[in-house]
Amino acid sequence: MYRAFLILIIICAVVGGFGCKRAEVANANVETSAEPAAPSQFASITDPAAAVAEGDRLFDDNQTELAIEAYKRAVELDPDLADAYFKMGVAYALIETEAIRTGTSTVVPGEVVGNKLVKTDSTKMFEKAVVAYKKLLAKTPDDPVANFNLGRSLNKLNKDEDAEKALEKAVKLKPDDVEYLNELGLIQIKLAKYHEAVKVLKKAQELDPENAETEEALEEATAGARRLDYNNPDNTNTAKRTNANANVNANTASNSNSATKPPSNTKVEPPKPGKDPKQTPKPTPKRN
Image 1 (spheres, rainbow, N blue to C red):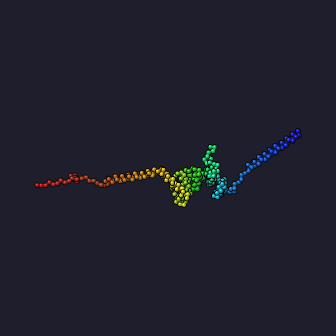
Image 2: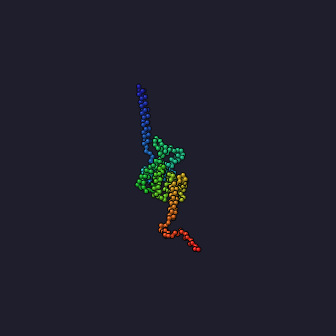
Image 3: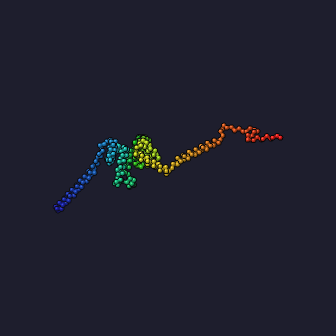
């Protein structure tokens, strides 16, 4: 009896110790999961503009992922900071392009999963940029930079017609900015508005004859305009030429008719009675 009682005590001790061990592990897991995330290295930045500037510096230094973290800090400080969203979109797009090139991309843009359209990080940022720029322009509609970057953001989202309108507004506000003109010309090429693009890009080339981007875009626009003219003759100009020729012929006919009429002040006198101007006098008979 005593032996059985001793065995029972040993078993309880073992089970109890195991339970305590499990409780310790569980508590350790809870503490680990509750541990706060490591603070961002940009947490010390309290000015959103300074965070954007730091992001720009890192992006130019090819530290794209760190640049994104700096831009994130900027929008933490100012959720309506449109430039930060736009620049994050550009940075994410660069990473995504590289992932596609190397075959390491796990996101297929445009893919539908579970009735939801898959969006890349760059798309999400450009969408947020559009919202922020529109909010900004509601207060200052004549801000050329905001209109320009709104157009660029819309272009990234393939909303080409809306992008053209925003860029046209930017060019109207800064008509001598070559970058603005180039961007407008490129979106017009994308829309197959080649003649409009040629006009815009020629102005850009006049302002900066050595700009390689302008030269390349102008060549593309000119080639597109020629193809368009070849495949779709301009009936409007043909009609204008036809109407011009018709007017010339009508004027010529009118002048010809008026020349055959006698002047209005010319009087035609009837022949006098007893005299016939056309009558030949009779010869006088000879006398014997």
